[in-house]
Amino acid sequence: MLIALRVTAIVHVLAFALQPILAGMFLSGRDEAIGSHGDTAAVVSTLALVLAVMAAIARRKRLVGPRVLPLTAAVFVLEIVQLTAGMDHRMWLHIPLGVGLFAVVIASLPLLFAAPPAQENPA
Image 1: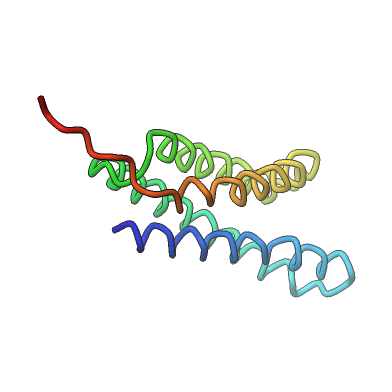
Image 2: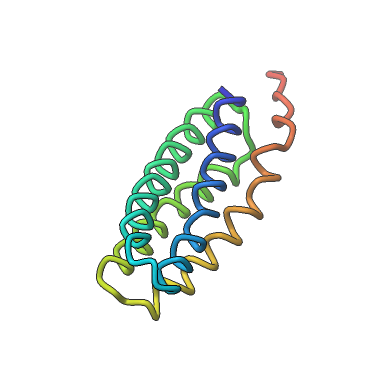
């Protein structure tokens, strides 16, 4: 379970990292890149949902610390907001939210790769 969570997190980061490249290609005149940008956004958001569900299961099994679940859930919700802002052409929200989310997604990797919390011994 923990390995699957970590692999999904890496794939999520890689898919997220593709987004500014595709956006830059579109802004450089390659109009077809906007379709790929939208398709990749759907993949990124789906991966965020999978991560949040996996984090809930991993937390229930005490495989991850208490901060992982709220973090992954918040990332999923904010990615949906970011995706919606992009589809609505609200670039004033879409771009800064994307930059901030990418920073959070990268910064959260150490939490996902930390050793599992010590098991509590029942007294």
